[in-house]
Amino acid sequence: MNHVVKKLSGVVFAAFAFTSGAAAEPVNIRIGWSTMPGHMIPVLYSKPDILKHYGKSYTVEPILFRGSSPQITAMAAGEIDMAAFSALTIVLAVTNARQNVKVVADIIQDGVEDYHSETFLVRKDSGIKTIADMKGKRVGSNAIGSASDTAIRAMFKSKGLQDKRDYTVVEVAFPNIPPMLDEKKIDMGTVLQPQSDQLLATGNYEVLFRAKEAVGPSQLVSLVARADFLEKNRQALNDFFEDHVRAMRWFRDPANRTEAVQIISSFMKQPPEKLSHVFTKKDYYRDPFLFPNVKTLQDSINIAHEVGLSPTKLELAPKYVDLSFVEEAKRRIEAGQ
Image (cartoon, rainbow, N blue to C red; front, side, top):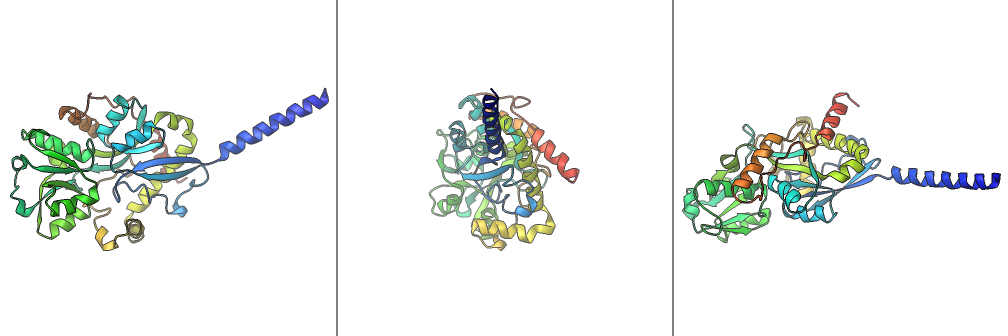
């Protein structure tokens, strides 16, 4: 009898030790991203001395995508846990892919006060001066349904132009838009920083419009996560978000600017002088504690519905928003923990 009890106790202890060991394994967080230095996800975890919990309770695996839209399929297939989503892709993830997702943090906001707003450029010799001049022309868009694509459609619709009837959308990865403009394969395209300022400095390009003129200030890209992943790993994710916010605050701190730009420069394989816009008013706005602007995000969802991209006008809050992680990160950081 005692022998049996001892044997069972040993089994229970072994099972407990196995379970405890498994729980101690860091949670690997697979995060989709598409643009640098806008999204910052590939470099945020490159400074171990400012990350309190990396490698202990979590690790991060950044995964590159062409834009927001392709990340929907990856999330539905269980290939990523978090994604950099535009307003429309949040709606499509919920309505088309039947995903239970939550907006958890800010990535970038467009057109806030006097911060940068996405630019849509044309060649100066194209003769295109107004949106009306784009009739019959080709538009370069990084991905159908992306934030910039929604701004294009909103602006064109406000001037009476409709996709397919009045203009043609050509999907082009962001880095390929400038050469396609130069080669006259497209007539207008979304050009991101730093290329936007660089092209304008040549005198060969003009801004046809900016995103804020089409949709106003907007929560351009949000960090969105699977609800089941959040609930299953809440403790580890509280650690992750503390580090995530701390890291972003470190990168944005003027005292760290030289080193921060050098890290981004090395990742992008671009000279630091070409990244002079980063973390200035020529860059996108980022909330100090990465709180997403839920109101402007809802406004963008409504616009996507109005231009025919969204099948429904999804009500985002409260069902598809969870700010508890950035709230906890702010509490920890302000408490000096």
